[in-house]
Image (cartoon, rainbow, N blue to C red; front, side, top):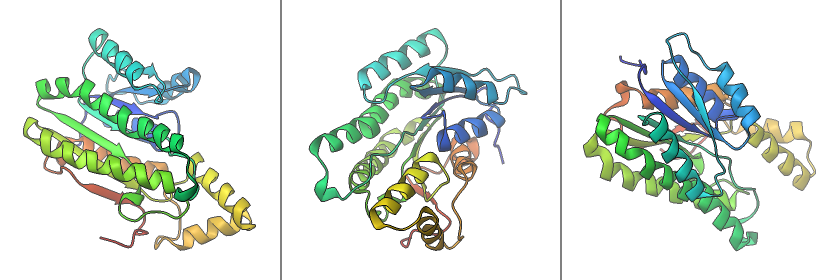
Length: 262
């Protein structure tokens, strides 16, 4: 099985913490040259310093705000012109605030749509030319199990994640002929800052303790625990390799069995 990513260039979004950071580390360990993108330069520098370089990998970063798609496009285009094209794109960014969908304000949908779909789309348009030229492309979108089973209390997220999943499937059909695959990884409850925030908010609304909410969430998973970010990253990294060349247009739940549907 060919899991070697040497001489491959990967762009990893939201890569200063959680799943994005874990994915960047895993791709680097398989030999990829990794370019991180996020807003905080100090955190970007710190993560770059932690990435594996034992196979001669060279890592870098792009400072970008995912509320400004055109600025993001310009920065990535500039990087490609000055450095190199990308073979791998990991679309990953923080989820929208929780709450019932009925109570959501219109600008909440607009911000989430910009951050999750418009920025993903801009990045794909920017990197696909290089992928076509190389005859090798891996676009992997980190979404949520909510695209299969909407999650209570995450109304805006459920709505936008579903849009991203359908965009992705359509894209997979269009790009497959060029040796480019497009797949979605759907994390379940994963031990990240995002999950801690969700647990705190739920505890505050229900009057339960953080431990009570956390235990109930773990008990809803057959594995009876939260995922580690590295476990999600393993699935992402596999889909980025040559070994996954005939896997295209699918949703891959990595949730310990929590999702009830197939």
